[in-house]
Length: 189
Length: 319
Image 1 (cartoon, each protein chain N blue to C red):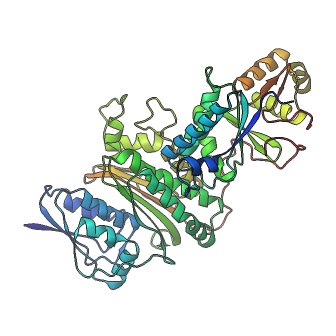
Image 2 (tube, helix red, strand yellow):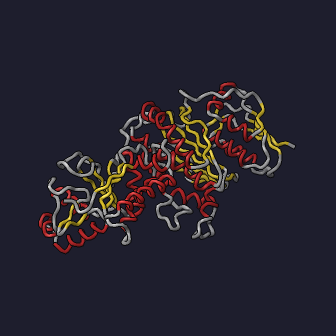
Image 3 (tube, rainbow over the protein chains, first blue to last red):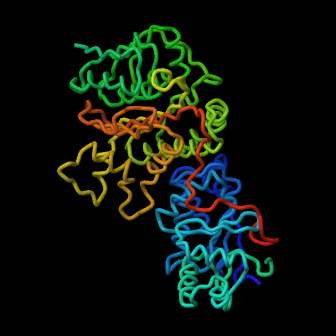
């Protein structure tokens, strides 16, 4: 059972609905800011903490300014202690989007979870140990800290710290005593 | 009295300096004739630079158009005369405006004033850019998106920093003299406030003894400093992104502003990384040169993060 309701936002539709119905590319900073504001409004209207999937599948071109305004500023908002509860995920990020997305993640020391047909990937500024833990959870499914420590052969205290960091960055999600990848469906493993 | 400014027969980024050296000592308001009658060839930088030249003076200048019919015809296809007619008093035979479809004009000279113009430029050029960059220049298909991003960021510099409109043009031609290959050249030029004054307007700006056009260019181009960085750490990434594009595709970037010019020089070129004490000229003039790909495979993007892998899980996850 999911911890939060899921919510899907097609960025391309937001772009056409809020900026101009003729645009198909996410370029320029004002465009990015307008799209992000519309996304934040949609998330706020849901009210309850949600797992929100931002879908870039229909976006042909994403420039650095829009990546910063949409991807980085949304993640910064969620990572802030006073930010909204819930999680933001990404879908449809293709090779052409990666350069600007990676650039803004590195600039702000952020990380994100992107989904590709049922498979999750972790992008951005993460340590090797953080990535190890995250990938273990992704590959094995929801786990508690003791199970992670056993699987990775690491001290429990180290695992606790890493899990805490990854949850704080909203790339892992707590569910009772276990953690899982946001957007993951328990039982799929 | 009218002062005549001679435009060199081949007008590019380098020879445009000769035009600026002639015009710099002339007091603003004095009558000037820009004599382009003997010009046989001009790059996008040269053409957009001429339009900026007109915008940089309060007195409307006269302009003698090229005598060679093929040159005039080409300039017409680039839309030069359409814009020049509003800025200069044109003298000579100007051919009727013609469409640039099917020619080596990838993007005719286009004014950039606001963000919508950037959307228009990027949207218009995508299909043709793919045909030229991948189909003709043999570059990896990934360059098409990266090219659009680079063009977008270069144009946004005008909207966000120039304080007035500017011009963009993209053209492909055979760069025989230096490279012996075809190239695609982007020129983005304005006659606005330039990098130094833009950075000086930042609330946290501190002048040093070395402060000037060269240092401003170095900060903006090499260190991603932006006047908006104060309070927004995400700013300044546009030029940094252009720099990565330049490195990946073995391209060349040069940016002139005020009295200085900075260049990211690939191995196929021997330009100076920094040139100072140039004739003063307002605004910023950017040129990006992307060479045809020959030989070894085009490098992939950075590998700092994992590439998406094929599906390994079962059903589930966001759709």
